[in-house]
Image 1 (spheres, chains in turn orange, purple):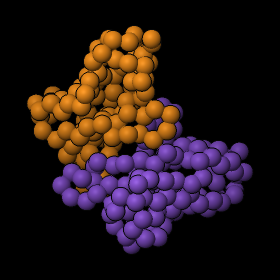
Image 2 (image 1 turned 180 degrees about the vertical axis):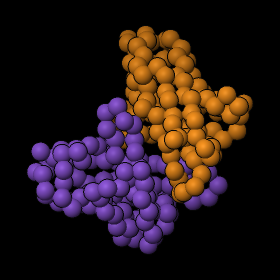
Image 3 (image 1 turned 135 degrees about the horizontal axis):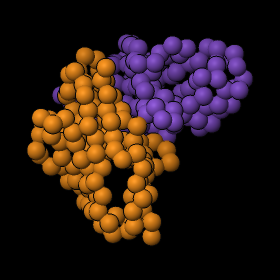
Length: 112
Length: 115
């Protein structure tokens, strides 16, 4: 059975801290790994990674994929209260159109 | 450019009632999806439509039907609602092509309660 596991489940930090969120996976036909940010409503797309070792970066957020060890990390530097959200990791698998397997998410709370 | 829109935002049903959740996208995407999100379970795919005129079952299709009305619209119908269908429902859309179908854009969600 395909599965995606995120850790930690929740995290509380203070503004300015750097955080690392983890995502490991066991799937039969890996195609891609995606990160989403979910505040009160819709998940919003952050990154898609398909190749090992190539960092994707957007402002204070960055992510990297290790296809040999089957995991990805999402780093957020100099955290702000606006970074408070649930971060979802999803793995795209082959076999049917757009088949994403989601993890349960990491809830990040950034205190002022 | 509204992206993906869903109606209604909230709904309360009694067991056995029926309803249709509406979804529309203006990104000219070929593919559309319906997910449900439950506490502790993550997002799970109910149905998807790879293109206009086609629909396929996802992980949790029982109790639901879908219609891909045209390229823009994809509706989800609950014929006889059950308390187990209490959830937040998200519609999403994506392009088609190498990896593009995985890059999905989500609507704001419908919070459904079945009593």
